[in-house]
Length: 135
Image: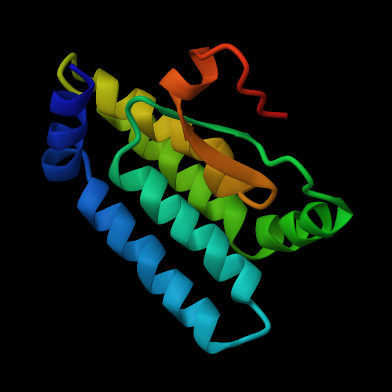
């Protein structure tokens, strides 16, 4: 079911558009050199927005105060409007029964868009395996 939802998300839910947008933002951040950490975060968002079903965000082990400070800058410059866009899109999609799974996927992208540094995208199945620890 997860694969079907992800394929439908790619085609109808905006996954390709979101992934492309985040990838373009990452390239711009890489060109500007100083913003390379934001480019890495944008690539993580592109990856997550292409295939969101069956994945989740967890705190990255070893992420320190630097990622927290960079997240504050991210929120001021881009995070708030990215998160707001995902919220508005999610609410709009939830108005139809068919769009509810896609609306939920947009809601899952809100924390990633708002506070991306110091997190990583993991498969839900990896979290269920005993012995794997994600902080």
